[in-house]
Image (tube, rainbow over all chains, first blue to last red; front, side):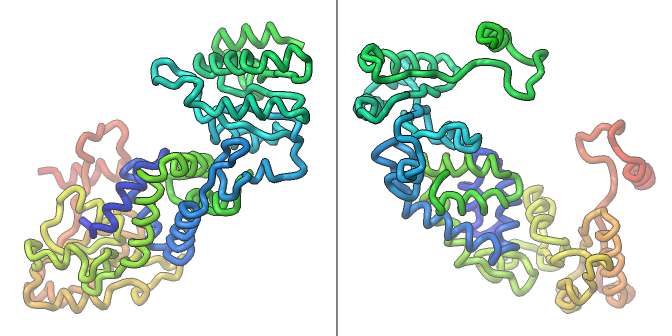
Length: 199
Length: 199
């Protein structure tokens, strides 16, 4: 149908989440029509990302600078560490502007089925970070899934010593009704949690 | 939130049809996680497309070789020219394997509102191509929109001379019920056309 380069591009574009083979084809057409305004800057940006991608040694965030933008920002409260599963969760919290502190990216959740134990996650570094005298709070912001909750419990156990000495506060995300959510459509677990944590 | 390179990439990815800002973010995360299997080949493919993209001098198709894959294919029937609005329509017909001949890409439709007249379209080349003695049929496969139909009429007028001399057959796509389509959901225009062209 078209040259090898175009077919290859369609193949890889269609692997992006959100694009299927049909929309990848449409995207390629659009790229070919808008060479100056889309194809050239997009390929520049991809090459730049490829060359510049770095994993932050402090928190495990992926960024184009190391330490990452957040760890390097002096306005960030270094006394609060928000533990997240992955960079996607970090970005979601950043979009909400919900965290004034820094992050710690685990790189996944504990999962016996997938063979992911504590050593596979970025947990040793978290333990060391939490021991620093400047750190006063660890927010465990793993997902509300079974694996996320198991990982949260593991982290709370891991930091139990500092917590007992009252040098560290360990908090977790509140469960409840999503803002704008109708009660009708919510599951019972969420409704129970929302009633239990009523204020 | 993240480095400049990442934000730039999200910006351009979200301009692709089918991707919004949210899915562009997810795509970037996916690219960063799968460097070897996705980021590197995708950026290679984009750079290759940028360097190799060519417009076929014969038919106006966009491809990485010129003449395009279709015009260069000796198995293609050079006596049939299928006139399409754009490369998207060409790809759609190719996916269906519907055309054994070659194509002619107009690059749009006549549109008084958008200031697109005959000179803006790839029509002069079509007239010259249709005069070649080997060409026996021109299939006018513009869309079933007002502009597409106006463009079809213009092309039929343009090739009227050859048609009168009976050296050229001019055909158009059949209107009718889409295969697998239920009558309930079809508009009246399509149903009328389907009844009129019943066989």
